[in-house]
Figure 1 (tube, rainbow, N blue to C red):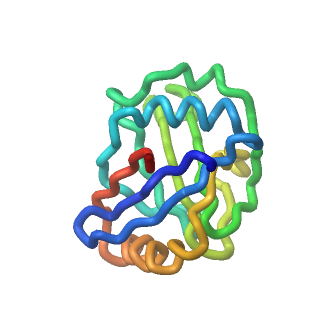
Figure 2: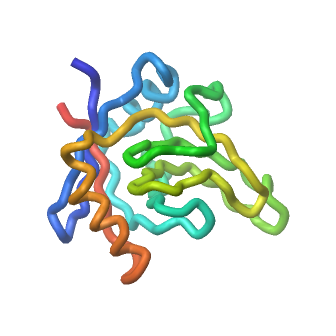
Length: 158
């Protein structure tokens, strides 16, 4: 049985299971799995450029691997609904932005694209939310666009 994660909107109690792409993105899956030995609970935000995507930062206590050591795996710029991604941006990579980004994101609807201020940005798709969980979860994701950030927990499904 493949490893899975569970994404839960804490206040709404709505969750979805994410099957990990252990063959297509093996090193990324191993790194994220290790980082989630302790579950993450952070505010999730809606993407500005990418369309129907939510994202959550991986907090410092979960940054347990060297993100620059991960190879490009299962990358795309045209995701499909349910795709879960890993994105890392080094400090000062973008003009005027000294911040470092450790990001897990999920596309919840059609029309997504991985496009930002620097243009097309391939990212590693390391999992996919199960179709039977996506519809209800997607409604909560879309609500972020209208009403603002929501607390999201990501944990291993063991």
